[in-house]
Picture 1: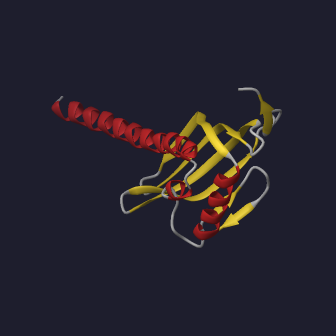
Picture 2: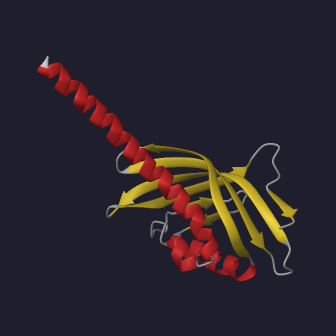
Length: 156
């Protein structure tokens, strides 16, 4: 009986440990999306692996290769638009130990230079790798959602 109880306890702890690991991956998506409102390229880049092999596919169809190119993109983007709302919805993460995948819908609002307010609504998949104990994005892919406008003008 003691052996059965110990096995059940180990099984429960393992399931709980997996849930904690999954929650950490989901929390990464929450922090990454929330960071857009800082409008700070340096802070955004802290989420990414410093590699020339970093690959970003945007919902617009654009492709960015490498940490330095992405940094240039964010620096330019944050000069031309101001994000003031960014959140994930329908987060689904899977943790594989030293790697993970998290997918979610990303809803964000930003002001363009003429002060018009725009809203984006896309789906995003982040591929993560644990580097020196921290999750880093090694691949990002965003795409439009069927029957949902990718970008639309909105009133505040």
